[in-house]
Length: 262
Ligand SMILES: Nc1ncnc2c1ncn2[C@@H]1O[C@H](COP(=O)(O)OP(=O)(O)O)[C@@H](O)[C@H]1O
Ligand SMILES: [Mg+2]
Picture 1 (tube, rainbow, N blue to C red):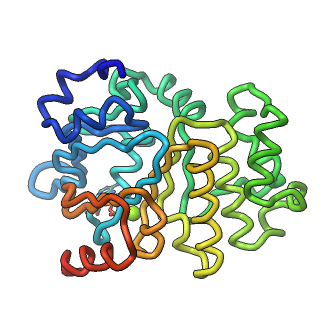
Picture 2: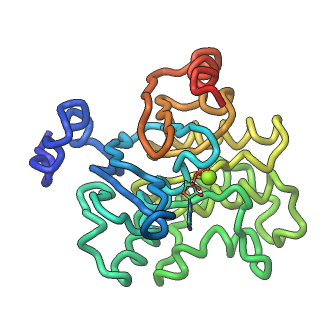
């Protein structure tokens, strides 16, 4: 394994991270995000150092307002850190100008939102292909077929979002996030608007994308049962990483969540 290009920076933050940094799909190092100024300033992220491993499914949990969405947005290049660094693979996002950041998001990152965020005037297939269309690429037929069959969307491709159920819309959103074969997919409470059964279905698809297609996924969730689908759970409290659990069970996750006292 080759050393991470920024191993000096990484090493300042301890060996726990440097062992993960080489095969991180994305990583935050000493990440601080402040909103507002002076007395009313809020540190949504307060010195967060965490690596999200490539080819793994990571869940992020924590009380409301603890900084989970901020963490995802800054790691995905949707927002910029106040200080510290965010890496996608070995690319330091702070070195990119806005245009380069937009390209990186389009080509190397997938995002799934709680509220699906599909374009209502486009069909399911057009929505799925949108990230590629925007960057002037065509989906390879194989990859499109694979994603569509993984998500069982074959008979829905010509439908518009208003003609689809919530679960179907979220499957389209997951397909859109996967079709460009991004280096990492971030999902912010992707099952938050779905009933339990439909939510389980989405979690199963995310799990197969990791197991069968070696995707790297980072997902925020409030639900210990959802977190148990992941390989690792990162617990965030007050803008800090409070704890990390590997091979989580729903019961073990629930115990930690109860200990957070909220
Ligand atoms: N755009 C913003 N402007 C000001 N404060 C914000 C903004 N976004 C988030 N915050 C604050 O940052 C903290 C973390 O928010 P967030 O990352 O959304 O938490 P979570 O996703 O864990 O609920 C909260 O105190 C929230 O009020
Ligand atoms: Mg949030």
